[in-house]
Image (cartoon, rainbow, N blue to C red; front, top):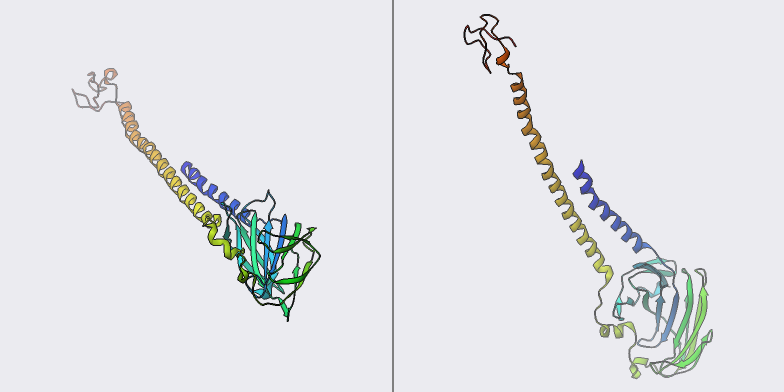
Length: 308
């Protein structure tokens, strides 16, 4: 029927919208730049590890970003992305353990993703030692690292050696780049230093620059991943309403047509009956010969039924 075709159009459009949104959300992307920051004894007697991820400029959003961390560290301390106003906001993620590693799949609505976790630091008297391992799993356009020397530490050695410079936080940093890496590449960064005190960096008057320490200053930024289902739901309701209006309008247009057809049927019947009436002006009674009048079926003189 005509109205059935029109009513199906909104549902077809909605199906295409849901399919394209789902496909977009499930499409993964490689990483343009991964910078790993290692901050030993910063705000805990452990190593605070940062993953700062930069996606390609042409990456379709939202997308899934897979990052691997040691399974032994448990859940990430924080998973965030860069908000519209430039601040860091929490991002949704899932965690799946594969042997010694946990795959953290981040739902990213922006091209910058941030992940934090704490890992054990080997402490032997005044000697400190830690080795970071990147297990691969994703293609990298660039792998970079940034090692922060804790306040009060001396004789720091970083392998591979990085360029030493004073950072914005007033602490000594060792930075280096190891170039592009394939998904099968396994990298490691080792740090060792001497420290005679157990005081942490933040306890020595240095500001807390981690995501947990700065998230309050950034303010709230809407998470597009939260509003996307609401947007799709609103569009679905609107399409249902439009489809219903089209359906009832076409039904109303269809009813008068049928009614007019029904009304015309008696008219055709009356016309047929009128057509069957005898033109009595040309008919004479076959019994007495008297001329009949218009509309007569019987002779007015003898009462004989007139022939048709």
